[in-house]
Image 1 (spheres, rainbow, N blue to C red):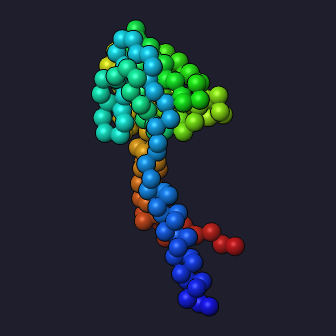
Image 2 (spheres, rainbow, N blue to C red):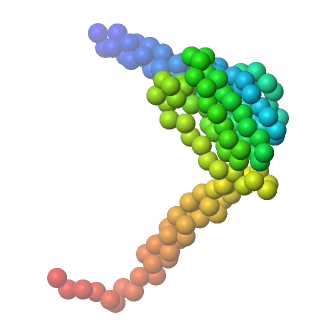
Image 3 (cartoon, rainbow, N blue to C red):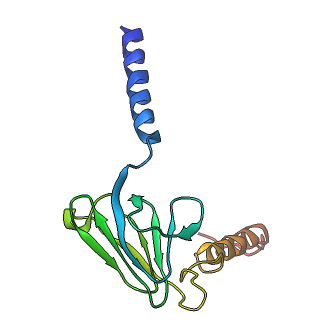
Length: 146
């Protein structure tokens, strides 16, 4: 009985593990690209190609004086305006997906909020460093009686 239970649990874990390792499938295409449109499919941004297939997690960057249209397999269209960076959702906005967009710097094309100092890590590190300093340098003679 114990062996069957363990074997069943291992089988379920393997099934979930195999499913998690499966890469996202293509769910859309870049059907319009005017001007400077770049796509990142996981490694780096590269110039977009018309009718290139996109999958969830791909990022489309539309720079100044440019525009793009992503058409999902269900026919829903997503217009991407200039100076925007869009992450392709796992389903179309017509099917209820929330589209993540952010503005980009029109001069350099870098995403607003990019860089180590603006991602929230630096303020958190500063607070943690201060707390550690205060913990180890706490004056032991300042006590409060109950």
